[in-house]
Length: 305
Ligand SMILES: [Zn+2]
Ligand SMILES: [Zn+2]
Image 1: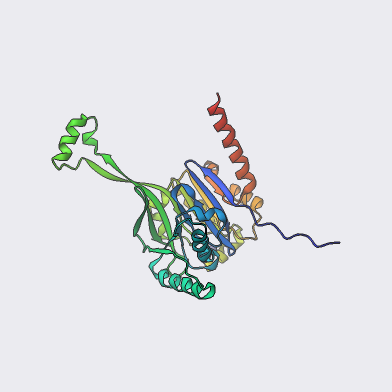
Image 2: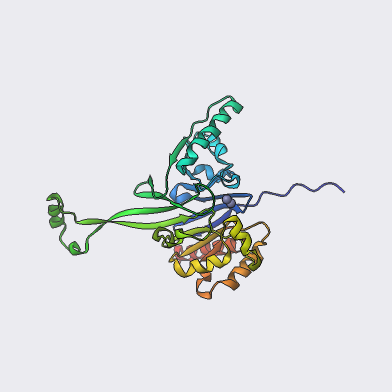
């Protein structure tokens, strides 16, 4: 008998929820890293898979090691591979500890890694690409924990001006008339770790096209554990589905104890049938792959009728 080779790293979970890709790894207590390439952002960096390097922004929800341990590596690899300085978005209280972390690495490595910190307090905003903003909001998990919503801000013609000839609109605008108003379109929201709370009353959370949230516990007998660790339980997700308009709700941060296929069965049994098609499990690789293959076939059929 010879020893077995070590277990492979789990593959990155992947979902194509048009127009967004949601990809990463998320297992409670081990690592969480969830990237949305189209928005140039990666939420949390429990470790730093290669794919995560391509995001110019890394938004940390809180300081637990399984959400933050990949940060120094992210900065270092981006620099090493000539990808420019990465920027971490974090609660303002996390800025100093991150400076200290990067300073410690200067002593360990005897070289300096460039990095940026963009502190973002609850309800502060930062523009991450043209007209696309990220906003932090308070969550209920640990000290200084936050979630993030990404939205687009568009100027829209006020209804009283619709149908008016272009020249007339230009004339009014030049005359100082406010012919447009600002519209906020919630795109993606990532709650990070949290228990149930006022965040689930927020329009930028409930109306995000893609809502990525945690669901650490599934078993009915684990409600107490969820409360103690300040996490969500499947019961909370059932409540959430009635409130949110999201076309996709992506569940992450399942505990390692839950077998993913049994978890999917339990979730399907717990949530009303009308919500089932919009609930996804990031780490459900079998179902997610089958779904993606179907999407690819559909796209091909459209391309070659
Ligand atoms: Zn966690
Ligand atoms: Zn945590």
